[in-house]
Length: 254
Ligand SMILES: [Zn+2]
Ligand SMILES: [Zn+2]
Image (cartoon, rainbow, N blue to C red; front, side, top):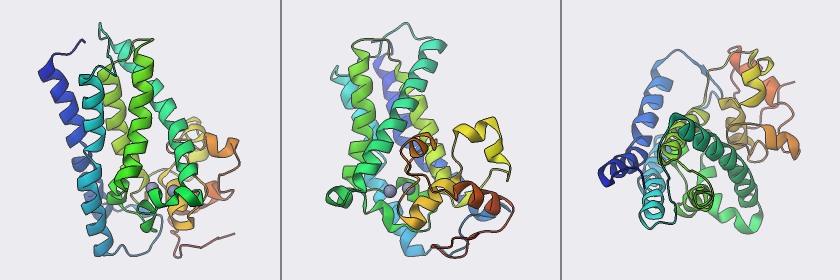
């Protein structure tokens, strides 16, 4: 194992503690900056209180699982640590999580499993705190899928612990942004190279407001592949980015 115990402890602490300041910063930004709202609908105080309460239980799960897997030897990070191994682990974690999230998210929209995901969908209009509001079981499944896969991989190839930690930090930010109910991208975003690969906050906001489709986390690729993307997702993003928010959850502007 490459990192010393205090170094590993610092990495676990980063995963345990980074989510709250990210959510707080985006919460402040979405309320104070002059930015484009996606759904111009009120967010009730009791929803935010419920989401904060959920986050106290679910946020430490990633860190606890990561520490348990590494310290028990199930996940074996190998050295020597290099920028290349960090970058490769980050990319593999990101690609795998996209697949795992899509598959498990779709499964949780299946009636017999929906009880796992129901808590997250109590937030029809979302805010940054919705990004940390899940049932404990849902967060366990999500993170076990990521860390379990990286643990298996670590017995065959080099897996970098800072690479996994870096992925989690990026995930905390993109997930909070995806729930922030603000559109930061321009109206021609989908015509850019970046826009062909990555989602916008409008994409996931539509999933919450309409309850189905747009299951992807960072990219719409799997939704397009399996026919589960809302066909008007790009049109809605363009409209919102031009400064015309949606005023009803079921709004379908032509
Ligand atoms: Zn869902
Ligand atoms: Zn969500």
